[in-house]
Length: 222
Image (cartoon, rainbow, N blue to C red; front, side):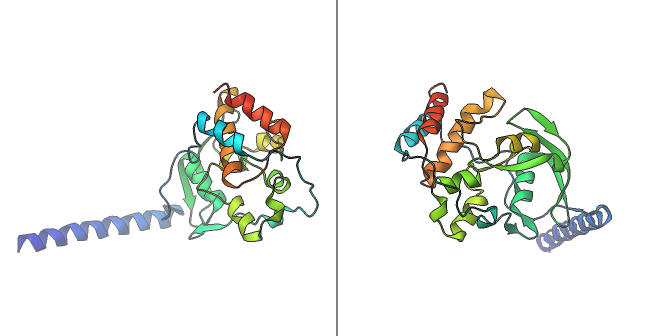
C-alpha cells in the first residue's frame, strides 16, 4: 500500500532527524528547549496617543515610603517552563542566535541594548530590567499587594515590563522614575515612556507630579 509506505517513510525520516538532533545536543551540551515562541523584543506597548490617554487616568500622589520594602517580597526569577526561569526566557527572547545549555542558561548569542545602543555577546553583561522598578512599584502602590501579585509583576512576560539591557546602564537607572532617569539613547525614550505608562496603568500604580510631567513631556513629542 503506497500511501501507508509513504507515511512510514516520512515518520522514519522524522525519527532519524530527531535522533540526530539529540545526539548533536549530547555532544555539544546545547539544547533547543521547548517553550513559548520567541520574539525579538518585549511586547509592543500602546502607541503614544494611547499612552497619553492612559497617563491622564493615573492617580497622581506623592510616592510612598520604603518602609518594609525588600526585593524578596517580589519573588523572581520564577520558573517559566522546564528549567527555564524568567531571566533566561527574556535573554532568549531579546537576543539573536541564542543557544542555551541543558539547564537553560544562555551560553552564546548577541544582545542589543536599546537603552544605550550597545551590543554584547556575553550574557553576563546583560541585566533584565524591570521597566517600572520593584522599589518604584512598592512606593506607587505595590506595598499593599499580596506576595503572589508582586511575584506576577516581577516576572511579567505579557506586558512590556521586562527587557534585556546593558548591566551598567541598568544599575545607573536603579529605582529612578522618568523624572530622574531616562535611557541615554534619546531615540528610545518615546518607547520607554509608552512602556512605563502601560505598566503603571495596567497595574493601577500611582505617579507623582514630577514623574507625570516628565512622561507627558516625552509623549507630547512622540
